[in-house]
Length: 190
Image (cartoon, rainbow, N blue to C red; front, side, top):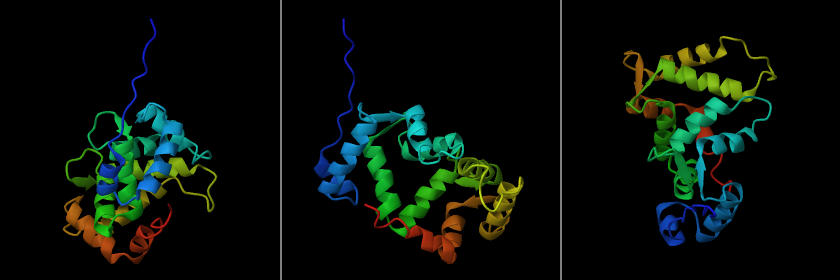
């Protein structure tokens, strides 16, 4: 008896086009690439990590890919469908500043309690430094992630209560020229 492969059927392109900021043609191109990497139409966390690691061969992207996977897996079912992927990508590439900042906050708020703690930010920073690899220039000091977190909290924790709320995060990011410039970096990628 043969096992039938379960395949995920995506929502109609028209529906995805209405829910995202991609054209039908762009969605078709993205879908072909997605299906090429994930023939079943959905990605589990292990496959996501394997794909993501190809972009950072010099470091260990496992932990950061885990956080990123959770941000894309908005219904928390342990897989990322084409629709999940498109919704996230649409925000990251074509979303408003507000949408991008909300998405970033969601990424950093690991336990989804509505706050970013120093521990959560440290976990993210360590994951980013691991992903970039040990052969960075200039050489990264061992305590760099912790210093980054302290700087982040000095800037963002306005009421000094030890956590950063979505409002503090958005307000601080909007006042930071570098952050605002980086929000525009990928707007015309596709």
